[in-house]
Image 1 (cartoon, one colour):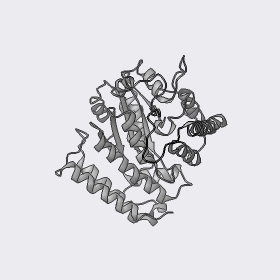
Image 2 (cartoon, one colour):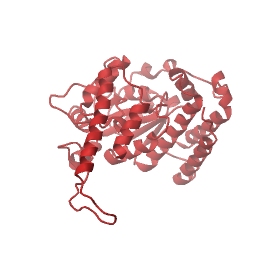
Image 3 (cartoon, one colour):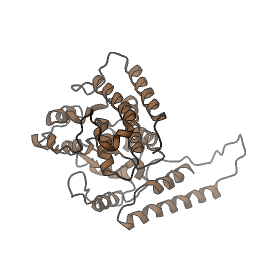
Length: 347
């Protein structure tokens, strides 16, 4: 019953939407999932240890009518922006959405919300509850026929755009930090051949900005979020082919166009759209904000990881360019992150 348990855990930790109907729908989905599991358990033949049930149906991971061939065709037209919360994922996504050939949805969180059937309705209601203005990326036109989950939605949108996808910012929402494995597994199962771009911001600014947005979260939790986000980005870079890596300090019309050419799509970003004056929570790495000072050593550990990545990823190719073999370099980064996490206080 792992899928039902994951859904239970998600409902416990996820901040509910202001729209009660959406929250009720999620709990109703949990009840349905439990009922379906009970039905399967009661109907399943008894199998003794060492035996297998030859007639036991294999589980499908695709919605009804959605074939593996359809998924294979779709995933090659997908693009994803990923990074830690408060790292520039929204700015990069909205800049990329300046292309008439590309549509990236903001925060659909497919890997957490894949069980939701009426996905378009859920997505639009979610952004309304947040007070997000309707625009490209935050609003999806309703379907004329029922859609079961996010895959049919993406397939429908791909009829209007050459490339479609989403951005995901990893935030401090799951106290058990189960999302790094869940995200990579979901992406590998459904979107293995998609294009991806990672965006990373200096950890002091990212953690400080998260602290201002999520004031109820302990600061060690925010530090852990940044470190786990770094692990997830590294895993994506190593597992999936052709992943590009950008840094928020480098965001400009030129750097966005450089990535867009790797998709490839034509794009013209207004020069003022990514002006540094719009960046919030700018901090000098040498001067920690007062609330972060008790955690200076762990912030320094994050900075060490960030600087090594910054020095060894090319701003031109957006790929690793260091002198070591990439597996040696990234293995070492993994060890540094693990050491910082092992020493991190709970709160």
